[in-house]
Length: 303
Image 1: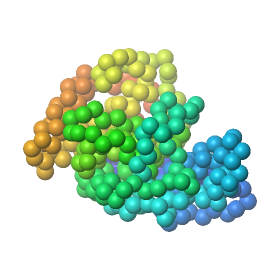
Image 2: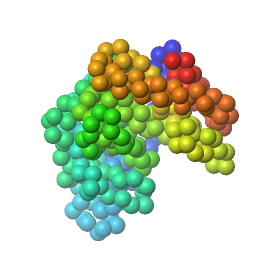
Image 3: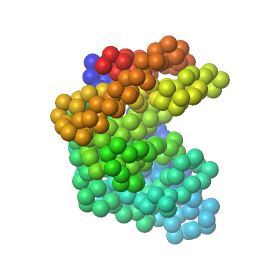
Image 4: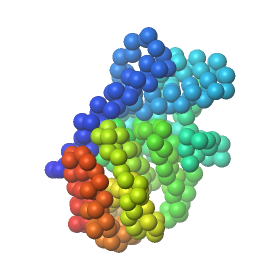
């Protein structure tokens, strides 16, 4: 892979986005011909999953008004309730963490866009826009354009605090994360979580079935992990390493020390994984996907 754009460009994912969006729209609003919106197929794909989750929850609750809203707002209001960024319009929200629901669809809290959704305050919208631009300038624009469409900013913390961030497979293209008010750190974490969304889509699009019985030692978890979790770590963390190397060139003071310590830590983790990573890659049946996972890993290992 000559560039990061080559790394993230993967036709099976594009086909998945188109086909899955069409199917979801057909379920929510049958008999209505739905054309692609002006926000792009990847955003359509992400927002379709929000509309599906919202409509399903409303149906179970027998909430006719909310169900009708989802069936008539397949973009869940994102076209008019979004923030312009260098990678396209993004939905940036700041839900109260304590109010996030938990249910059978996710082990972690989550948020579904709906009729009550409000954009994040302008200061957070500006922070997000700066973070997207920072990531795009480092070569990760294609990744964030397709896999970080909805950004849920949670707790504000201090540099050096533990930052929680996650994705859930039922809401692809959506990321949840704490922040420290710095666009470089937010860009790093956006890349990490978008990487998870990318790999989830890639595995689905290629029909790769990973053997749950195969176990690999994860230095990030200090535990044995199945191939799915191990390969996710060996993809998402190397992406943040590649970004951090570039970010260090323009950083100073506390931020520079923070990023340098992070990069050193990730190097120490990655150096213990080559044998297991080689073995785990053998479980990936698609040549193109295997090559991309290997390329990102090898580039990070060489840092």
